[in-house]
Image 1 (cartoon, one colour):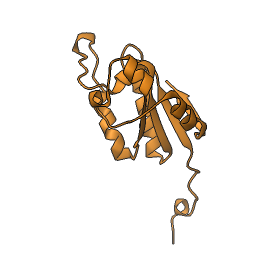
Image 2: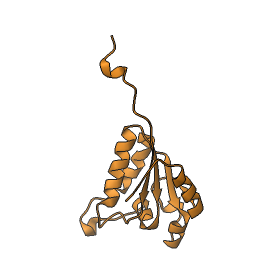
Image 3: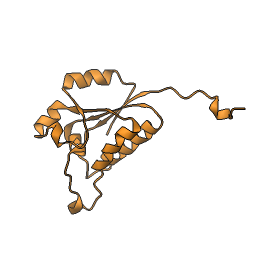
Length: 130
């Protein structure tokens, strides 16, 4: 006989977009966003992650945090693939205005311009900005 919870239908998969717009340190937003993304992915939701404005610095290689006395959590972004979070996007304008390229980032991303990002946002059910 099956356990009662085995016959229960799973909840619907929702399309969540997490938009990271803030620098990685100085506030709790970047770390909280990463934790929320990992939780959503663990519950098998359709997760899209966008980095724009100073949020592109969250995934920049070579972060050194000793001087500010906090742990560098940027390597954790590499764990996203293990949670099947593979839809990572970066604003072309944000990268260029900060002198960065995809070679400067710790994870593979797709670079989109503002119109492409707007179209992607239209496809989402839930958008959370951090």
